[in-house]
Image (tube, rainbow, N blue to C red):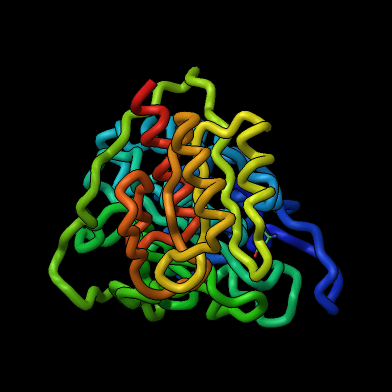
Length: 300
Ligand code: ASP
């Protein structure tokens, strides 16, 4: 399932390029010597730069994935995706898809037209992972740069290089080298609720607010005025914030707005002693926002 991204990008050799210009069928062509592409059915879903991904598109992807997986002869699904929001789409699918079949997202840091483009190898790796029985029952996966990550733990951690993804708390769950797939641990799927999404439901406004020295709570106040139904505060360290922010967050809860505390520090766990706030635990702010969205939609 092709959605665009740098993996489908073309441009000049110095790095100026446009994402999502090459169709999925042509991306598939680049791996024909490595993988039996006659076994692959291509769906051209979007051709966007994943900066422009949104919640409505997630719902479309979800429906499409479900339709594919419903076919008896479908071993799994590979989604080609821009790296900017790949971890978010993967997390959304991880929390909304109830399936044993592998669903694997991949992309590239270098456009298809660049020197040493990483897309073809990543695509081969992703197809190999989706086609491997050992990948069943592990939830949604992200395959980049020879590493297999669980969508529950992965984040983009690097701005430029091909080693752009990591699961900082757990490490990768497996490796894929020239199509050979290996997992480090026996099969298990991350434990969490799977949310059922009704397509027509209007998605609430749930922003992330990022902590900084001098935050006087004004941003929290303004998103409340703007109608936020929930918010994630990406605090300092283990999820702390200034006194002024605390007052603003207390006010938010009083108004019925759901507040989840995460941290802008990528590794570790959020400790939220104040029980009126939800804790993002190990989740990144972006993951926490998706979980909060799903929780709010589940409540209405
Ligand atoms: N801006 C691109 C995208 O997310 C970046 C990439 O794919 O690496 O679509």
